[in-house]
Amino acid sequence: MAMASAPAPVCAALKLVARGRESAAVLQTLLLGQQAPADGSASAAPHGLQELTNQILRCCDRALAALRHSGTEEEDADAAGGIRKRKPERGNGAPAASPARASKRMRMRGGEMGTRVEKRATMEDGFIWRKYGQKEIHGSKYPRFYFRCTYKEDHGCTARRQVQRWEADPSLFLITYFGDHTCCRDDDEPPAPFVINFSSSSSDGKPSGSPWPSCDGDGLVVSKTPDLCNSPEESEFVDQSTSVPELTRMSSMEWDSLLDGCLDWMLWDGESSFDIIGDEFIGHDIDYLDVLS
DNA sequence: CCTATTTGACCAAT
DNA sequence: ATTGGTCAAATAGG
Image 1 (cartoon, protein in one colour):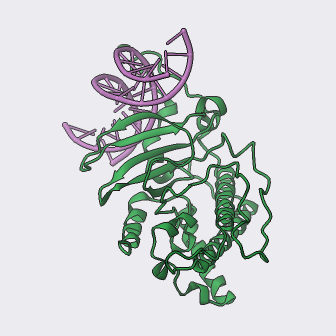
Image 2 (cartoon, rainbow, N blue to C red):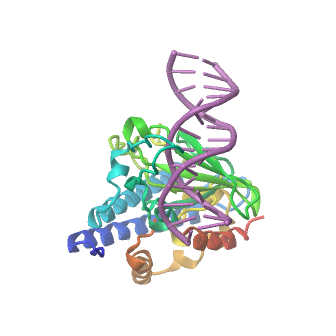
Image 3 (cartoon, protein in one colour):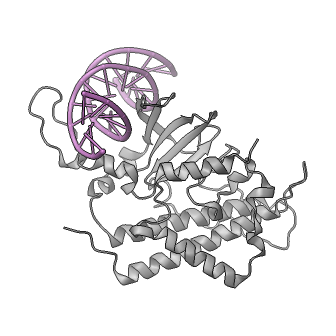
């Protein structure tokens, strides 16, 4: 049976949340633009502000994922349940067809929601992962590591990630995330940890303690979204003079049309922005990184 | 003993 | 047949 498109209300919500996300991304770009490029000088945009923007982006992503999921509900009954049926016996008896494992690989190839790719200087990202596999990848110098969230059993958290050294720069790790952390973000949606005080010019407005893990200088290089939607951490690696383009000079009307275009891109073929076809996007980001040095 | 990691095997997709 | 993702027994470490 062919999949039906999402119902109209869900579509509308999808577009609205997507637009909200893009607005947050724009805000983030503006914040990056405020960062003083001069060496040694403190950034004009408080770090807490960037973190907040990042959280907004993440929230939007999750909302988009949930909406999209509700619109095209299928499969994933196992993913939501968390506990997978174990193989009865291995290598001996009958093969025992396991429907739960069907189409696993296809979902990996971009069918799964919530996928994103990042490049980091370290494997650490603030979450606790449990390694469940390692594989030599054909044509690749470095093995790929497979991790799942430590709390998969406890909270049914479906988050997974694959980590591999980036061949173009082995000091960086290419981290592909699948799913999202339901273990520490669903039940525990953090209250606004702080109030933004725009009148304060100091960078003291940092959140006292975000309940979410933050990327404390890990050197995140690549986000899952195009240039418009950079994560704040990127600023640590990306040359500001090139990463903050003329976007900041656009009028609001120009923004509108731009965002509409962005929406069109995001909703292409029924997939949303957080479904990244790895190769395509990585290629884009490699170009992006060529600016560095 | 308990928990996490390692690693070869299994299996679906290509 | 090959490749890549996952399982799970064996192993290591506390």
